[in-house]
Image 1 (spheres, one colour):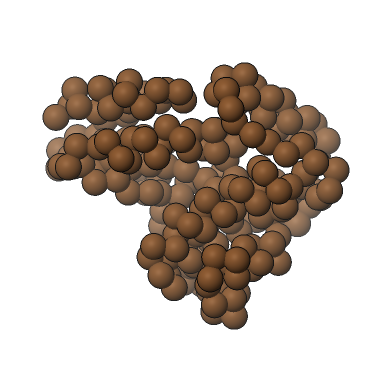
Image 2 (cartoon, rainbow, N blue to C red; image 1 turned 45 degrees about the vertical axis):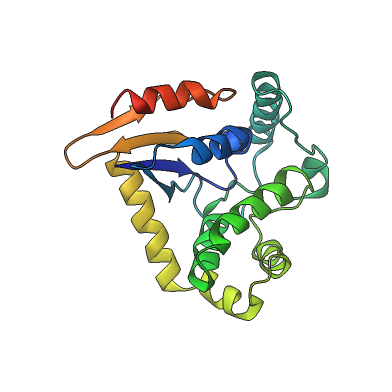
Length: 203
């Protein structure tokens, strides 16, 4: 069986879910393999984020901190950066990291989240992503070529299509799939054991 984790590097709820996800990965039954799928939260744009959307996302961050105690956000981001509603570049960065070295995919994802939420850097910018790539030991010239390539763009579109075929319209999401059926898994943002119980009920 496959457990699909559908996410986006710049999804703030995915950031809040990270500790539970790591616990889940450590305790999954051996017959279940987890597969990360990029859902693509927001397509490419160079336009600054509208003020109303900025306010909505700031409100979401505060709500996450109430819902998931211990989640950190650096609100300096909203003063230091020019936010854009564009997460596809960060999705392509994760795929580009995997192309160089598969094990770097998760490392890139974590580095993007930390840059955005802890260090108030803007992962909508290719220059920021290139700096992150260098910080985790990737070849930045290769990375810069890959992230703007047609190959990586097609790969992202393929993962987005698969996400839609799974019926997912919010991130993060978990879908358990066997050869015949698929099962949406209810999320709990504070307790991995509740999610594990739900998964094991289908075994």
